Image (cartoon, rainbow, N blue to C red):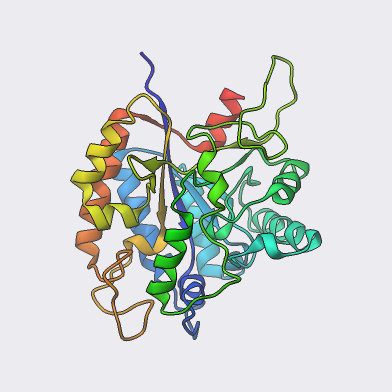
Length: 312
């Protein structure tokens, strides 16, 4: 029997974007960015060792930095997909007018082309903040898939946890989607006017946009991210993944997940015991490698753009 597909994806949120996300001063972190100098090469090495191709979601602004642009090209040369993660990495894109949404997606698309990268066909919204307007913009722009939906009812709880981590509440910081998105399918599907059900598709239909949701773990539907691996441990996450054998899964990682946090990196003088912000690189590397190897051994790991082209 053919193994179910697995998507291993990395959001390349630069340190400047992560610090801004948590209300910390950006300072010189756009230029001096360990996410790009340390984290992304670590991921390239990990994926090379396991022998898989992943999808890296890049922020358009970063492609104007020569060293980051060079590293992005290395990703492509190593057999990985690069995809669109907006221009500015502003969490709360659904608050923006239509023209700003089009600019966030289109400006990044153009930056890929100018940087000599393959044109992206996939998108993830910062903070998983997606709505019907953004789906329409992506469809009209010729994108083949979106990977922003997190089908969980825990969104309000996760927003509270994020505010606790940042020690501040930002009412405009829309994250983890809407409570209603907990009813979305847990497997890839074709949105139908942004209803949370599958649209009928018949042979001969034009290619459209496919939603590839982030996997959520039973029983509480906690998102399958590095934060889950660091919080629960790789053995517990693997045990939960065992119940999903035969189903498509999407493991979502972030560039900061393989940055050494033996000293404070994001939060200046503190290392909160959540999200991996208090862990040394060796611990992070061992935890993520165990889960990545398990997924690679029990699913068929594919780049999202390849899978969409073959399946739809």
